[in-house]
Image 1 (cartoon, one colour):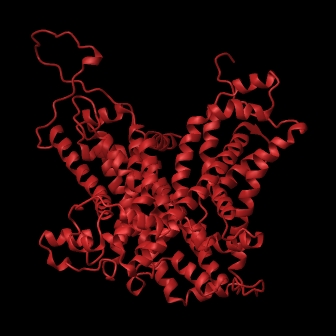
Image 2: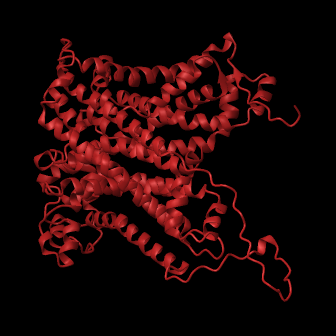
Image 3: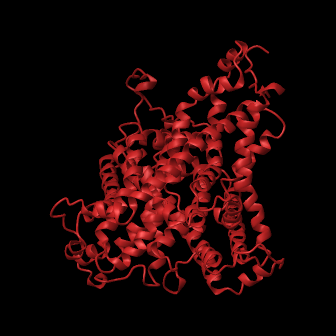
Length: 628
């Protein structure tokens, strides 16, 4: 039929002569993924039904006894309660705050007949995204110092405001406030990312929808509730699921803020109790049952969120808008010529104090207040990094008297931050190169070639995005030990690669599907083989997508904390996140706060510089992900 769109063609597999292409492009990444991700998760469920100590090969099958014992474990039950509290409070709090800020930026400006975003709002997006780029362990260390009863910034500000009750108040040491203080820290670190996510979603809403609502007399608040929220419903649902998973597995934040689980275990989470039980008590089988339980709770939470969104239903599509026709006057003096459509005027808005200028001003003030909340802790740490410990205690909020870099020298040498930095560059650099190469090859084959089982492999890769890492920690520990890779750089690199593959394949799969295949087909007709087509044609064409995914992978790998502490216990091979956690625990006794703050700056600086240089690509890839 003429004019009908041609069906998308997918290439057939290369001939038998080119089987090496498939073995390398698909077989190699799939093997790494199965060995280091899928297999440990499967093993975990078996180990959870044994009495395995983890330090010997002998184990006895005990069935569901470990799960029964969990019901008698008061620390585990408290951890489950804390995890549920986080899952109930954190997602709606982050979503409401980030959606409010995103709405102020996108539709908070002067309208003048059309909906406009806030002027000069780019700086708000850039600064709000800062915390997302900082390692979670560093955020925890930073805020632990902010909450410090003696010289923390928070108590100092509250005391200056006249609240003497907070002069030496222990936010993390009081059972009443420890959980609330921890939730605020996680919210502080997450709002910026989801704000950018919602900005991209809101910008995808046709402007005509907002104009129609405005013509109907809807105010900004009603428009946000009745138009914006229903139109980005799918994005909100996805954000809710991911935030819920984060809340149920908030190990890094809780470990940095309260390594012991807080007063009366008020902040302990399942993952903390799991690691202590496995690696300190030698009860690997029992600990693995905790990971399996966490996996089930996570799946139930995700299913519950999807069920609630399904029950509430999608908003009904509105019918065609009937234009307003004014009643004819009894005897019009004379008919005025009709204005062209482009000159039609909006109806005069009702008199109200919520003018465009007022709303824009309030929006700026609200966003400036949020920026101050983001920037103040960072500036405080930066200034403190140039002070001695005595100066920090004597004048915690004053400017440094001189820019003395002794703290940086001490952190780099005495505290071995320099060694940890080099280790991190080796591990992250190696893992990033390998995962981008293998991930792009795997995504390319799955996206461009048609063969039986391709969809199964693709969805198997996607499943890795939802697996709780804690479930695989214990079996992964044994897998690396059996291969002689435990406590080594190659072992850590290959593990990083395996767990980063699902994200890489997921994003690049969609990108390779959008590339025109006619160019590659023309090259094939000219005699180019599959290897040459990929490396000389398709890979360069996918450059923008690969660059965006590489930046996200760099941030994720640089900020990794769980895998190193479980699989890399040799102090000489510590990466930066491990070294920072170790140094922070020692600084609590050595009281070298100046060097601690300098170490924080050294750790944060590379990721902040990377973000500032590539923030357009980073936020652009978030937008592209929302649209796809």
